[in-house]
Length: 113
Image (cartoon, rainbow, N blue to C red):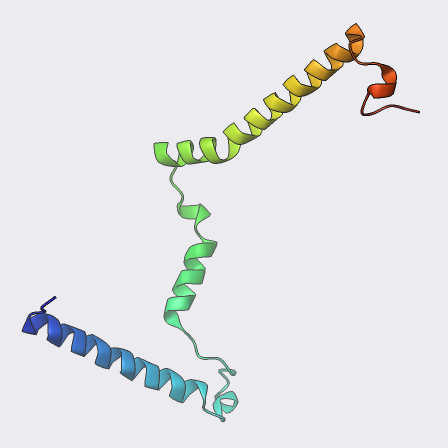
């Protein structure tokens, strides 16, 4: 894969900016006198703060769409409904066998004695 000179320059500038930010972070995080400035021992990360604010306010900006409806339906409602239907069908079938005498009392799974 051959990169053009513009792409190589862009990658070089991006790498230099990353190194500069990394050096600044290491300088701030390893400052032993940081507590004296009143900022505490951690470095404020604007990107992390934006991410956390986005996670907290996600519900406020939620817009229901057809895709979100389908996702909720197929991921939550449908599995619960299918499981409930399967449980009811299995229990009704077992109860029918008990009531018609096809299963003796001693052979039942759940009994009082």
